[in-house]
Image 1: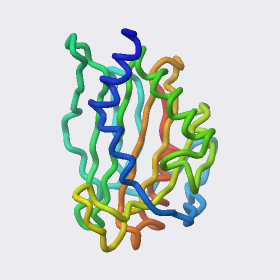
Image 2: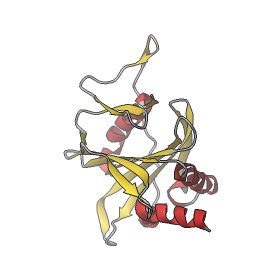
Image 3: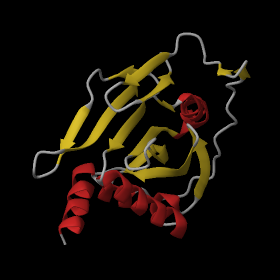
Length: 204
């Protein structure tokens, strides 16, 4: 009972219930990444920045046009324990937003189990365009969908493209979820940047 209560608390804090407004179908595939390996090292575009979370041991490169909020937000449970660390990156020109949420142990593994269940059954944002991929040597799940109805119930013009990627951490007890939201006309360009970012992701 206590375990279920903690999971429910986590879902409320993260606003996971909001995915029920994500209606519609997205059929666009992300273009193939154009990062190439040279002598075993990934080449990233000139000027890209590096995000490093030394406390929790992960890092990645991100486009210089994406502004990092500068502070990672923390969500806590009713006992005051940190359960989620969230980093936000925004490009005001393309109206692109990336949120990287690290769900700490022991809630992270439970969250990943719920993600896997939705992926396997093709529910919610996994209903149309989904795939498995590798991130930093770990299996990951990806969904691409369209948001055409806003939180207020108003039809969005243009619709937004949402890409969600979930992966377990290095110890397989915590979980990292990355959500990229961008107007659909920008989805191919921003999606390609995001795929590059995923290729640079590593656990330190």
